[in-house]
Image (cartoon, rainbow over all chains, first blue to last red; front, side):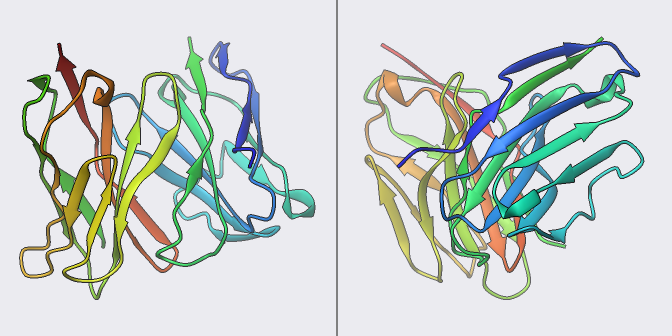
Length: 115
Length: 110
């Protein structure tokens, strides 16, 4: 099966600019996650979707980050305006079920550098 | 809240050495436990999992046993290879909540 697809792989922007990331989950996976992974740390959940509804966005900085999953398939994550501390790898993951023992399938991530 | 603490790295071993990466967790109830691995330039991928106490997850020669009494899920491998060089993440999942440890970088030298 095809894996989780993310684009772009790399992005360099200046602070206060905007940026968007795209994710296409594994076909049939209802649950989609966006994680932020800062260098040297584990992934931190930003937002979780179940189909096209938000399950958890408690750690999403809503003043600058937004995400949508129209039609319950692809998803985009946007940052506007970006700050230096947003430099990180942004990981998209999907899982078949919204259950605790359902493993996550990750994409290769988008490495964002904010200068 | 739920949390995962894993052994700080980096860890450097010679080929065929024994590997242990410690992981302990804090959670109410009975979470599912996972080890994910991230090879250079790639995304995280599931290495193994255990969903209840005393379960042993295993894959590619790696093993980890869910120990409820010590709230631990240590990763072990009897003989590491150069190709095992990667970052290893311990994680727990309970309901909608998935938490990751900070990761342990393993380098295996020939």
